[in-house]
Image (tube, rainbow, N blue to C red; front, side, top):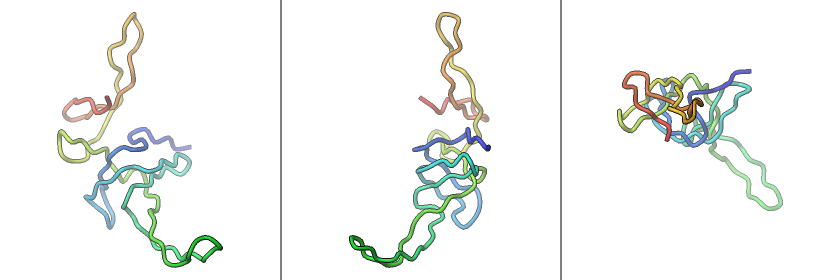
Amino acid sequence: MNLIKHVKKNDLVQVLSGKDKGKTGKVLRVINKSGRVVVEKINLVKRHKRPTGKEAGGIVEKEAPIPASKVLLYADSVGRGVRTSVKFTDGTGGKKGKKVRVNLKHNIQLDK
């Protein structure tokens, strides 16, 4: 099982390669089993939909999953995607703090 740790749902990410290289979008879904993510308005594919009793048919565009290794977490402070590491904040009473993602190059905390 591939656990995706550098991006979560609702994160803003930048695409590293492929037809949508350089674009940014919000993560709609993380699929840990296959190591993929679905990003808003990225990797759009056309699907032919048959009409049902309630909905009309036609050609529908929807987002397809892309490998999680092809996206980086977008940092507003830097203005591009950044590599991240995980660190613990300072806890109180001898406990470890909260786990947060940190920009590796500039050592800036990305999680609130």
